[in-house]
Image 1 (cartoon, one colour):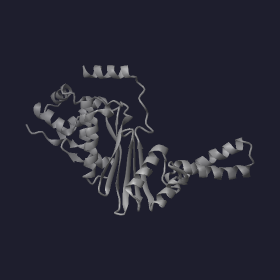
Image 2 (cartoon, helix red, strand yellow):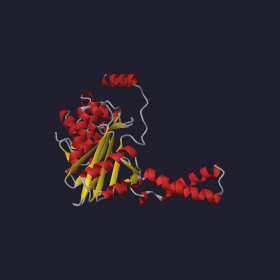
Image 3 (cartoon, one colour):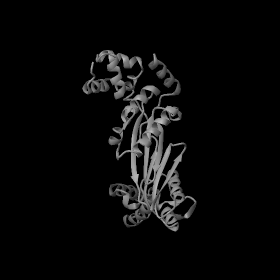
Image 4 (cartoon, one colour):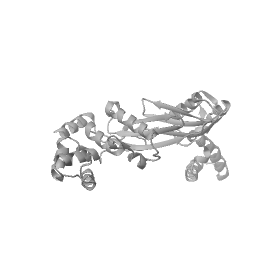
Length: 293
């Protein structure tokens, strides 16, 4: 019988399996939805559905560059073991290279990119079923530079931290040095002007309270706050940070001394801001064993 798109969609929503897997299951089962669900379960494909609410805060980040276009992505798994799995790393490479070849600019459009497996979203569902852990594409950013600009990329700890920078008028080596700085010193912003006023005001309030608690008069406390705010900016803004290899100059001065200026920086640290799993290794093994039965 002919398998229409709505039937495939319904099975996909019910099972969590990929589009091509659902179509094949329905074809094998003559369009019978329940039989197709059993087929997917028998093949282990429908297991992906069970993992949707589980925590995936491990994984890898990576950077892909081709000419004037660069992509930085973070793909998560439940355990660090999976980040060393060839199935997982090849999936990340497939996602990254597919984005480079597409016009996708954000996460939603990336998940809809058409590939052999259906879409990027279908690929992730299929790999979730095969690997046995919840996998997710958490974030992605696509950057396009001008001809007089360079990319600087750096991966730390095999992809636990990934930094992509764009400099104008400097060399790729200088850009990589800046990326290494960002990996090590964890700036939240590039320039002071990037820091939201709400963040600055909140920091001012905290610093003022600290100064008052030290017994300083209000006028003295306010002056101390301004000095400490400058120090705050030197901690959270890449351009203001002391350059690791020469603490006497800032990162922006280092770049300027080498004929360039900082244009952009993106830093991904895997799992930052996410809830972490707290189950132990023995429990993880038992969970995997019980799910395979």
